[in-house]
Image (cartoon, rainbow, N blue to C red):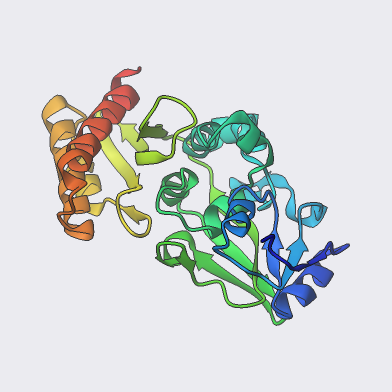
Amino acid sequence: MRPEFRYFRPKDLREALEALAEGGRPLAGGTDLVVDLKEGKVRPELLVDISRLEELRFLETSDGLIRMGPLLTHREIASSELLRSEALPLALASAQVGSPQIRNVGTLGGNICNASPAADTLPALMVLEAELVLQGLRGRRTVPFGRFFVGPYKTVLEPGELLVEVRFRGLRGFKGGFWKVGRRRAFAQSRVNLALALRVEDGLVQEARVSVGSSTPTPVRMNAAEEALRGKPPEEGVLRETARQAAEAVASLSGRRPSASYKLPAIEGLLWRALQEVVCGP
């Protein structure tokens, strides 16, 4: 049986928020929601199509602060010269989301708000130390990216609220990237993914940001791994210890699940490779 629901396309953000306040569910790229509708996992009474709201499609920068609208597609993010220069982990993550068809329509906001532990943009936004701006009829509030998620597929979004902006400081002076492991080389959901940003001065790691995804219920920073790097030369022994610390941190956060037998070595190996590429070049 086909799902039955009412469909509404608002002409502006205000109309969208009013419809959401009445119990509507937002529809943007639809790459996850449409599948869930077909499988009967969700049964909304009202779909609010926000896909044409230009108020939510923007990319701006001023004084080092980058502001992004949630309707930017993964293709737009991956091809942005600004983001490839100032936020490379995010540009690379978006470039590896799904297939070209998915990247053409799938949005940053959808990838965030779906809150899948395997979402590729989440580790990148963690190392960018992003903030999210949420808006409802009662006003706006800003939430640090890591506090937006309360569990797999669960967020702090309240009924009637919408993600309207993603913002962060560019990674000037950092080197970094995004890496993933899937069941196949292309079009694969991440089994393990990670983002990394390092700032090295005078032969020492001055700042390190590491986030591993698809391995914990919500996105987290690998604090022990970052501490293993900070203030030290990026030499082989230090890099190997950092990779080991990250794997141990994931084990403590997610427990020794059956998947740990391959995920923990995969995390350690992937971070070791990523650190080598950032420090020495691919």
